Amino acid sequence: MRCSADEDAALCDDRRVGRATGWIGSTWHQLSEVAVPLRYALLGGAAAGVLGGIIGLVIGLHVYAPTAWFAIFEIGLPAALFGFVLGLVVGSLTSLVRDRRRRL
Image 1: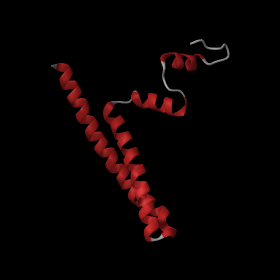
Image 2: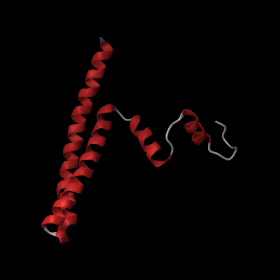
Image 3: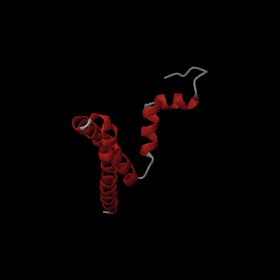
């Protein structure tokens, strides 16, 4: 693939290698450079937090609509914390298993 003269060299290299570009691509690339336990913890916390926030919104709208925004935090934040801790444990176990397999 040829790059034009006015294109950024890093962007051209990313395209040549086939990496995703843009906000999601750069975030995913930065996340891949983080240690495995922390990566799992961040992904687990984000996934559980979003899911908990959506569940909190649905419950809050069903119970009392004017305070539904508070239910997002009331359920979403503990879910995010739980997801972070669970992801940290799973990531640590994954890292431990990988290290043991490399030694064998």
